[in-house]
Amino acid sequence: MSDVERESLEVDILFVGAGPATLVSALHLSRQIAACNAKAEKSGGKAIEPPTILVIEKSASLGDHSLSGAVINTKAIAELMPDFMEQGFPTEYICDDASFYLFFRSFSIKSPICPPNFQKTGYHVASLSNVVKWLGAKCEEAGIEIYPGFAGDQLLVEGNRVVGVRIGDMGVDKNGKPKANYQPGMDIFAKVTVLGEGVRGSLTKQLIDRFDLQGRYPQVYETGIKEIWRVKPEKHKPGRVIHGALFPDFLSQFNGMWLYDMKDNLVSFGFVTMLDSKNPFNDPHLEAQKFKTTPFMRDLLDGAELVRYGAKALPVSGIYAQPKLYCDGALLVGDAASMCNAFRLSGIHLAMKSGMLAAETIIDALAADDFSAATLGGYTERYRNSWAHAEHMEARNFHGSTEVSPIFALGFNIPLMLITRGHGIFDPLPFSAGHTHMKKLSELPAAKRTKPVFEFDNKLTFSKEHLVQYAGSQHEVDQPSHLVVADVDLCSDVCTKEYGNPCESFCPAAVYEMMPDPEQPGRNKLFIHHENCVHCKTCDIADPYQIITWTPPQGGEGPDYTQM
Image 1 (cartoon, one colour):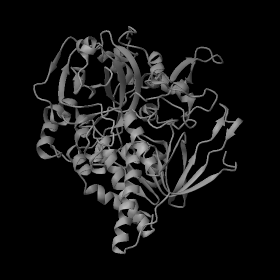
Image 2 (tube, rainbow, N blue to C red):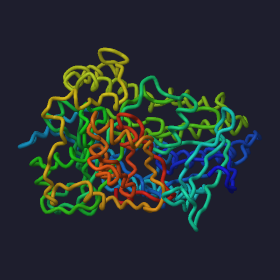
Image 3 (tube, rainbow, N blue to C red):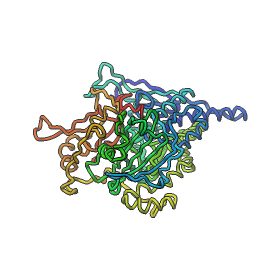
Image 4 (cartoon, rainbow, N blue to C red):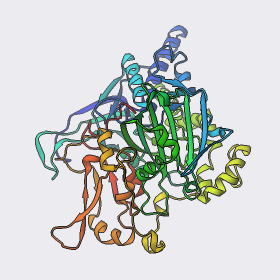
């Protein structure tokens, strides 16, 4: 509806997405400007006009869409705020027992030595949702405006410069017609737009494609399934952090798990599944359910109560897939900038540090009144000289190693990487986009051309339809699907024959279903249960034809991850 009249708002700095990267960036920017101006006042130097700063967030409340395995390296938050604990940082426990387990179907073995990449002793266990709420409160105390329920829908571009963001329309029916409560989205104009939408953000995709910011190699992802359980008190162990892998499955696909204890006898369990599988029936949800049938998990969750469920994709290919971090009028931070370190299964501290570096660059731009790439490019130089870049360099060939083979990675190149500070046997080790690895049914053995059958017991293991209820996901049914499939006929004709409709497998929320077509007997058609969506972005990533596009639904809608 491009012809409707829209309200507009002008700010100096616009942050898109209220996550750790953007909130830390906004807070650091505000504090550094105040410090610069205090120094200028004493020395008689030139002060910087305090900018108007706005943070917009698609969820209804801060933290609602924040899902992560939050075992946090506090290096960045301590730089931002040395007294963060005294200021009420929502730490639940501090890890004092980091371990790695080898899991088998009938037993498990605790490694006598925790691998260095999983050594989390001293890290802080927290709910990322609570961390985001706490950071948001700090921002508001500093006078920073935060607008929840504002879903960025479209980049505003003039020439070769980003000038802001258009918010998605509200009150549109499933046929795209305005309803009685229709409200056109606002245009927000800014001198600098900082995108921190998280993984595979819709505006970030627009920015990378429009300005050709792609990294050296394509981004590769895994999907993390996360469940919160309330266990029996005697099975709750504060300070425990476990990582592990299921054997022999791990030798064919580089999946893994985490587990840590939270307050109120809660345990966070997560399982990550690579999205570069050859298997068209690769199913992150099913892999997590199957893992829970190991004796260790059966014992831990015996008599426990499921509290919450969620899913989120993670960028895992590291520094060689990081996009260019800037262009005229825009910066990328956090997972939008591929700051996750998959080798250590850690990224919150890197997201925060990227936000701080972006803020320091914005100060230069404000001082020079120059928001072009010439000034914003200083962000890349700051990053290259930071400990965040050094950490990524030490992990730079991790994903390339796993793509060669898990056996090569585990038995040879990862140990060599630890010795050579990331180099390994070759540098760089190339890799390709995950969806390109998927094999057609005709390329598989006959026994593997059908979906695996698994019986859920509804006590320990559950179907997708059941678990979605624990994600708190809410979407109005009468609106256009925010999951846009460019060619639904391809799903019925070509995809069914070639891949067996993998969307039914890789989606962890039962969004996609092939159902009988009443108008064409004997043929199925795609039905999209968009109201189930948990905003993990897996479909946008794993579709072999790349015809599924995730877009933000009406502002405020989506999962509720407040206990995650």
